[in-house]
Length: 637
Image 1 (cartoon, rainbow, N blue to C red):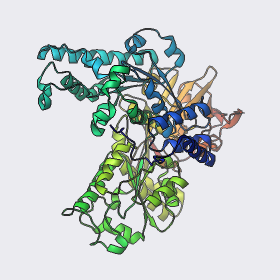
Image 2 (cartoon, helix red, strand yellow):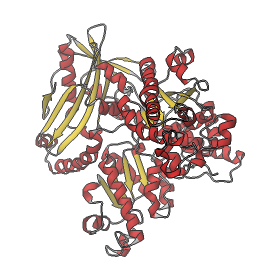
Image 3 (cartoon, rainbow, N blue to C red):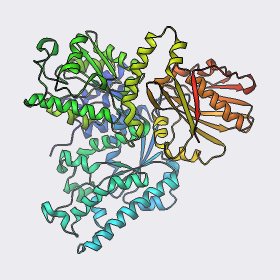
Image 4 (tube, rainbow, N blue to C red):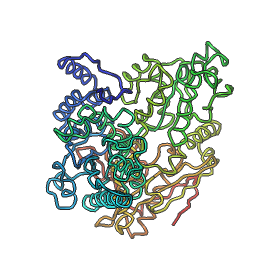
């Protein structure tokens, strides 16, 4: 049985021997830093053996996290009821694929309940920042008696869904205060009724089906993060994931051949937790959104729409992109075309689902696509590693991978009907949570285009800002917006003074801490709602200072006076607490150089500079002077 492969990633070649494979690594690593070289290698379709080799290289070169990482290292504790050690390399490599340094602790075989219910020296020493609970279907089906009637089966289901699982999740939160990932259950148990399996109360297969159906809602209720192992196995074929002989010989429910795919699922959840999920889908046009070349074939000559199998396939690609946009993914266009020709289908083709209003950044010219992608990232004010580039042309894909290794570039199939499936399987845009802000994001970037037009027509910056009619709402952290605050804290990299990451439980604790304060900010203007754009966390110090622990802001609102307005709110918080000065900290990272001099610009004085580049600033409140900004303040309680 074939392994479930990562088919959206480029192959290293099937025939590479061990020596050639190691040489290939050396070639990659020589081009950039070792870390980036390892990341480049991880972004290939690696089987179990090659994944193990890469993990050994990773452990040898980086036993500890490298400096300058964009995200906080992950310490993942994996507990379960079956053999799990063979999965850890794939989890670490999947994390590496996303620029995350991860270390993994695996509990003793089958001891998950004991590990969570009693003090555990090994776990305490490991100090996990996240947990993964993997329970096998054979173990879970043991809760169902073989002669169960309907009432007994319902009690067994409740014992697992309302008893066992929530008890484990709560133990993690109470003992370790960190998020927990929960896999669904592989449908590996033999059926007794076939298509009507769920009609038999005593069916183990039906029991697992029902439990999997309840798991997503259960996770939402109790704050766990679902990892859809059963869904992935069903798509690839359960036999590709599960080998009965390995189960009975080694108690491996996930076969080694499926370990890279398992690690990929976990890696996506880690990406969602640490802000490494992609934000923008950059689309080619000719033979990607429609069949043919608009410049040669004309509006009536391209293949798109009903009545043609190929045209309907391209329509399905547009439908998938549009649905991604509606849930918050930014859409951009990068095409080698005359701009007028490129825009014509969006304006005039009757079958086009995507229209110009759906595209946040439209770049069509004859320049190098890698450079155009840089332009798109700069225009949208997001990192290059937030982009996914979809292009039918293998040359263009290879060119962008070579020039911009941080951009995600999936291998697209020649058959257009398979492109939505490929993008979905790659999981670049997978989230662990979804907020109202996510649904509004695409429209916010569209509104930015209108702001740019206004700015270009304004005679000076001051008149432009005055005409925006900006209103800055702010208030203390509250349960209603805590999910979105958590997203911002764990995703923001560029305008982020300290890049400290906090789990939702840690941010909730700030709401109960009198010595700390968490403040959110939302900006609206004449073009619409920019959403939650800034988060500040301040903490009382033993002296007369209030320290700015965290200050992050969306790059979309820079240059409008929001930085000065935010500082005014921070000063008011310090005065309310009877403090006489502010203390600001700048901790350099690979991405936050844009705020390296923020405190200097805001009138703080440099008090200390450490060897690691960290800077400590102070601002006596008596020397602070309010700056005039074209912003109205709206304090919410």
